[in-house]
Image 1 (cartoon, helix red, strand yellow):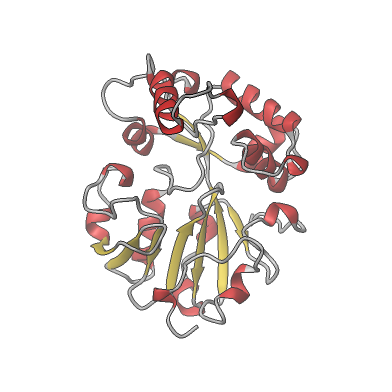
Image 2 (cartoon, helix red, strand yellow; image 1 turned 30 degrees about the vertical axis):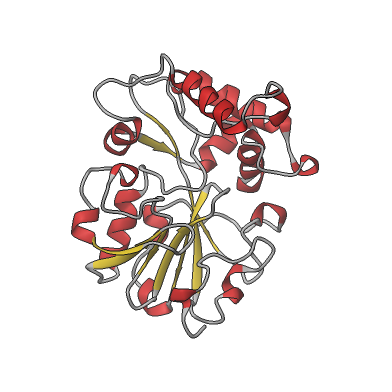
Length: 272
């Protein structure tokens, strides 16, 4: 790829990821978004995760956007957190729980099944691909154990410190931070990005949110897919040589066939 900088940073959903970059990257790692707990916080009492709305429930003759705003406000009522935002508290005080442990406790055979349950829960799959039983078991178990579900499409506060450390360990001092659409991009020092403030609360990052992180020489690329519960890490062999990604993230190395919808493909084992 002659100039990845000016192209869409993530492949189309039905396209194998590694080959799509046309040799720009030697390897790709799928870092799964952790589940987590915060002592003293009950996820059912917090405004957390995707608000799932069904159009059929919207009253007739009510403006769609107005109705959505009203539903969001209703969910927030009585769920205020004192002493900071949930993202801030999560970044500083959460305990991460891996997908292996959740699969074992919920009775799911692998991370593909857990991904399917998570996507079913946010109505992110076609009906024929959903697993409602698994989604209900997952939500019931996590609520009972006061476990927060990961969120899709955004960098997780629970992973931000490890992502910064990864870039620093790759020998970088600054990175390009871009939004989902490639319309807003800023060069940010890793030292400033490493502070305790959650990225979603910063005003020095792209206006529509940080969704892509890239080394200035394009040798290391990190992105989140809008409807997925993972962070993708792609890099050249030289950049990835000594990073030991599995020490900081739970996940797996991409095969040549893996698409963004790897839940539909043969299982690639999690790195031990």
